[in-house]
Every structure is written in structure tokens, then in C-alpha cells.
Amino acid sequence: MQHVPLCIGIDEAGRGPIAGPVSVAAFLFKPELIQEIDAFHVPLRDSKKLSQQKRELWYTQIKKWQRKGLCHFAVTMAGSKEIDEKGISPSIKKCLTKSLYKIEKKMCEKYGVCEIEYMVLLDGGLKAPEEYKHQETIIKGDEKIKCIALASIVAKVERDRYMERKDKYYPEYSFIDHKGYGTKDHYKMIKKYGISPLHRKSFLTKVGY
Image (cartoon, rainbow, N blue to C red; front, top):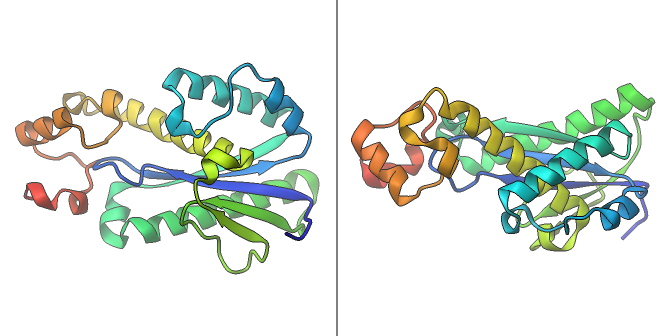
């Protein structure tokens, strides 16, 4: 792998839920962060293997590191309407590209670094646009690579917080509990109340939508 000065980890959250957006995070990782991560009292893991409380602790610490200039991140979401119209994979691809561009814009505006090359490390089947020559997709990357694990935490926390905010507008669906995933109780609520604007109709064809 050719040496490049900085790496960006990419991961998504919310591919599978039947309601709410999909969220894609780009996490710019600086080498100085490694020591900080090793010293943090909560072990770094894939966001799905952390409790909500531990994800929130990581997110708070990440925000502190960002203020110190040790990292930067950007999150882009695509809502249920876009997912229904374009499909989940194209929606994720669009969010991924936007998050990368946001990181590059931030680096250009804040540091005047506008032509730097990044190593882009992506989880699972994700791919960056072809213009990113230095990229690698890593199966279970969120379990193996620090910058991808941090991206997974940011993507998950921001999406969960979005669903918690929406719970106030649609309390009958208890989004605060299941975050839009297709739990048994969630399907019962859909049967009772119908669907909301947050629901993905294309994910609910088996129940008549």
C-alpha cells in the first residue's frame, strides 16, 4: 500500500431498518490519534458491538479530539423518500461521496490543504469514487481498522440521535426504542397506525405497502 499522509475511514449505519435514513460517515484520522485511542478507557470496537452508552462516550471523546484538531468527520444522510426513489445502494453511494467532499472542503478551508492525497479505507462492500486512487475495501473493516471503527460509531450515533428526535413527532411508533429497525413491536405499530413519512415503503412491500 503506497504511503499517503492521512487516512479516511468510511462506514455506514442504517442500511437495514424499515424506517429512517441511512447514514454514512467519513472519518479523517491523524497518526497522533493512535496514542489517544489506546489511552481511552473504553475499548474501541465496531459500533454494533458497543452498547449505546459506550457509543455515546466514544462520540463525546471524538468531538473533543475534533476540537483539538486530531481528527475530523463528516456525516451525510439519505431519507426514506430518497431510498424509495433511488434504492438503498445508490443512496449510500451518494452519501459516501458527499461525506468525502465535506472532509476535503473542511481541510481546504481550515488548513489551506487542498490537493492532498488520502488513503480511503472502507468497510464491507463500500467503494469510493474512482477519483480516489488510494482506496481499499476491507471486509469487517469496522472490527479491524481504527479509522473505520470510529466512522461506524459516528454514523451510528448521529443516526440514532436523529431517530430519537423524530420520536417526538411520531411517538406512536416508539422510534426512540428500535431506531427504525423491523422489530416485532414495530411491525405491530405499523399494522395499528399505518406508515409515517419516515417509513421506507420499498422495505415494506411484504406487509402491503
